[in-house]
Image (cartoon, rainbow, N blue to C red; front, top):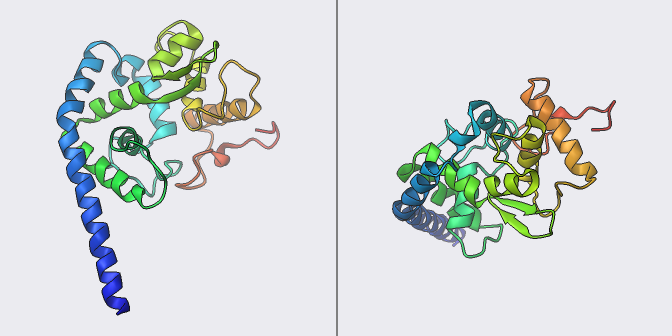
Length: 219
């Protein structure tokens, strides 16, 4: 009896995952057109410049150009890749952690099949939650946040300002740009050490970069 229950559970998970993959592939027709329009308008990752794109990926998804939608091994990657983040926004009316992670992952693999990496990056940047602007309005989109906080696109702000934008991505509801946010400043300091090659995340789950902490400076 137990064996049959386990078998049915495995089959149910397989079917649920396959449906998620199918839906991801189907979504790429529309998403591809949206991504191409963003890139043409100068809102793709290429507009950041190679050095700043490298900073973004080092923090958000170090193996982005190598994986097929998920990554469970790269230090600092965490359990959610850039593609999975995009899946959460495009494949769910409301994402609730738990078994939906299976659909999120399968949907991401479907997106990877039908979209190029630059297209995925453009869609991710455009849909990223970035917290509130100086007037208290919620901001969606990396480029929009750069304009709202620094009055310039992300390729024209300082590197410190760019790193601050990247730092907010992990918890936009909790980290506040433009305020004396100690947690944000700590994360910024750790990202600087990471991109300078001075440290390495402790493992795949070290998304807060504890491996880049500086005990002497309290960060």
